Length: 285
Image (cartoon, rainbow, N blue to C red):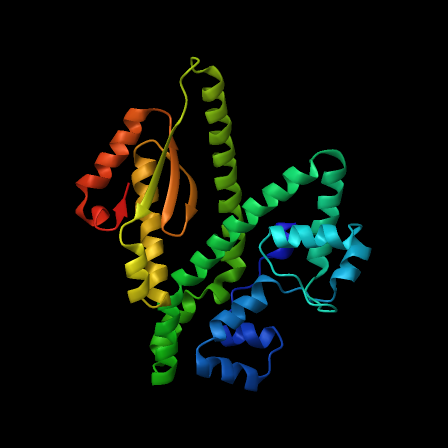
């Protein structure tokens, strides 16, 4: 299925090539280049190349699920309800929902299925935002090179463009996501085994971390600066917790919840936080 969605394509040389292949007119491409959104537009065209030809009623009729079930899954993934008559679904959505219907019938409780969908939607939203944000500085540099007429610099930026490299990069990312899921599933199973075999009275230690002066900082920073600050907090928190044997359970803005198997590990995490000046300036455990 993934190979169908992200089928390997010949690597194109420029973002403009991608947009032309997607059927955009020269005027549309020129306008996107002028406002610096051509790369984002190319990504939009590449990641879901299938035609959006179904409204929610037609999708329900084709997939075998009723409208309210589809709305529930769509919302669980984190998307807003489509407007009446709005065509936002493709053949890929039909295939996915038909698979969901088959699995639901024999294997998965509907409540559990929706719960897993919410977790998946939240995780993928964060991952997608991180991918786009990671390329923001490079994209800005490319746009400036286009405005300046620096063809050599533009060519260098094109070579690493997500839109241009999507034929190779997207299949690679799906493989990495599957690998990460398998690893985390194994780790989760092992944690359950540990909990089931520890002596009565033992258990997990739960810890919390938040960002010092976050409210004040959020009032001083623009959207980009705030996003960078939250990203740094995520990175530092994950690094401190993971290197000291813990696991992040939930990240919500400037707060994190984590678990460790023993209280002394939680103490190690607290000390690691206190010993690093850079961490201590932003994170409070």
